[in-house]
Length: 162
Image (cartoon, rainbow, N blue to C red; front, top):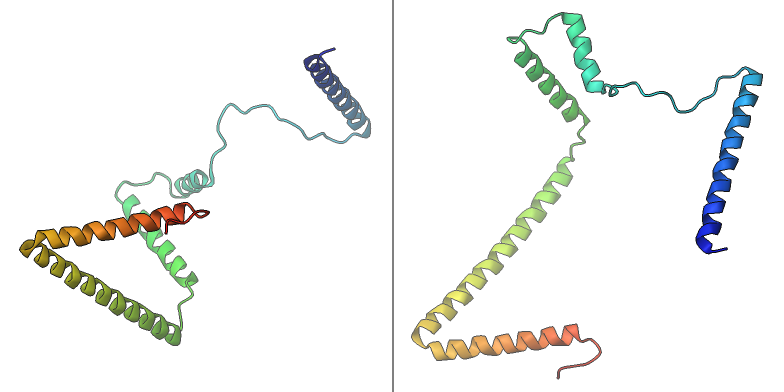
């Protein structure tokens, strides 16, 4: 017998065993008088969500929802939600706020100094390139060769370029 036939026979046997077990379980549950839980018949409609139920409850309480008061009601619900969320916020202490503000200021000053220095360096390179383009082109070419060498060295970890 081939492997596919054996597998299909095992599957058929398993299905038959399951059917027999369910039939026996149904007979047992009927004898005991308890109700069985299982798959229920489809309802033919989607189960309504909670939001839909809340809107229907409001409509049932107030009658017909007026198109004039509805925007104000939704705006009021929005601000009520904002207020409840703001009450959940854990605000930092004064010391934490001062410490974090100091960190932000220090990082901002350091990064602005670095960017300013880079701007001065590139301005000098551009100015030198306008007066003598051959020197600047040679320097840029040399930097590109060194960067390519480092790239090759990092990509081929087992072998070295130098």
